[in-house]
Image (tube, rainbow, N blue to C red; front, side, top):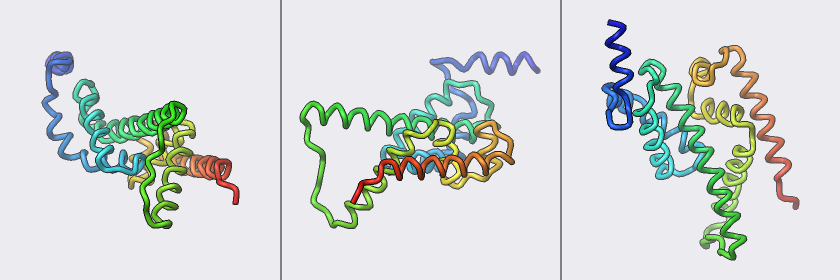
Length: 179
């Protein structure tokens, strides 16, 4: 019996597909996309992140029972990496003389978009653990789910989230435009 489990886990390689992948995908896809969308602000980009995350899960040996937490954390990490990459790309394009994409819009929509950009940029500057804790908690995961996903005790999740929120506020205030 134990040998069968070892053989099955060893069979998961770059050319094989996990037997539990479809079931895990169907049960966790909305949550994975939701976590990524919270970070990225775009469902389309979040779906791309979900695809990356499920591909990584398919190659992993993570037990199906731990899949939801693993996938949520992986989605947050991957989405934060996308935000950081986007920021670096924007800087490179600006240095190269590229023009920013500015489309005429109603002032409120511009302000809202700018605020979201500021929050995402500040979130990307936080320590990874704090950023992931915020994303997971504000994506609707319970304290117990966040604790399991980040390997924390359930009692420390509240403290971690509060510290992360405080650090986010400090980043936002540091980066606030002066009027």
